[in-house]
Image (tube, rainbow, N blue to C red):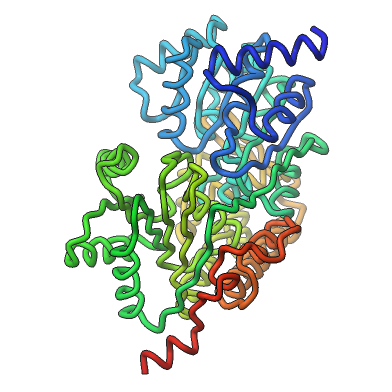
Length: 494
């Protein structure tokens, strides 16, 4: 098919299958790259239509498309959209009933589906990996690709496992998608995918309809007072983000006492409760949701008029991701940070336990060496030998040791020690996490500088994300001369 014929076919799919008048900026470039079998990283802001970038080329490619997503709710939405269009699709995740999983696997085995939507955990499993390896997968999509670096080394090591499983699928074209990726995250995605240089399509993250504001606060009581004041003045839907479950619960209690209707969402709620809260917010039953960062990825309610951060985020790229859920309809929206200097200590506390330390690696390797007798070990046996280290952190370290060739994973899963484990030091492996820890501290300091700057906040945010070209946005509190200085707040409180 000639390039002209391909473009004509793309236009037909966009208009007839998806009912759209045309492609948005950046979409054509990504689709062209995928169809030319080029491994691609697409960085496109919320609402830019990332899903279409794989849906369209998948319908022009002969084989199967596997979409790996961290969020089951997002996966369900994409699966339903494809099914409504009459495009054969299946989803494989922990929320799908066993009988549906069996039917999905049979369809994959018969190669009668166009799309397979799954999670990193499922792709990392031996069963699905083997099934897909025997199918004809010609496109592998990694949605929310920033999670490779944000979660893969943190509490969701299945991302690293899934990257290993990717090698078993043959040579599919890989498309990684994310809304925000500063230069160091891009570098880590490229490193972890290990596919060589990626073709990068970056449409920019600047969204002129978003106004960034910071409200300095002097105490928890002042923060609660200002939050209530802000919420009462809002028009339209809003998200309030808090850093901990405890803070979500406290805010929920506060709003209830003030007679402000809201729903709450956090990771310790039962699945049914989370689903009910999300449905209420997404369907307009509630205009306000209070949540941890467990809520948000893939949320496409277009009319969110404000995103309020009750606590200081860990970095400007995290803040960009979360605040970017406002104003996806293109109309003006506010991104407000309630800044208390003491909040910095909360993020520092989180950082202390985020990554494996050199002592953690030493402890795990010591346990492996003591247990090893030429055989293999289960995960539970390894965990029993290192009771002071959390299960998620052990999984991360085992994955890293596998990548370094110090252990091997066998079916079961069981882990086998290699001679290198007894001969080599893990200082270089542990040093990589020390670098990550230092980088996280640097990012936190950038976040604090953003909160205290008298310069354009949008420019500061874009600069941290590696995007230049904006000196004054004309919409943030500093540009508009409406910023509240911390000194003034302190004097007022006194």
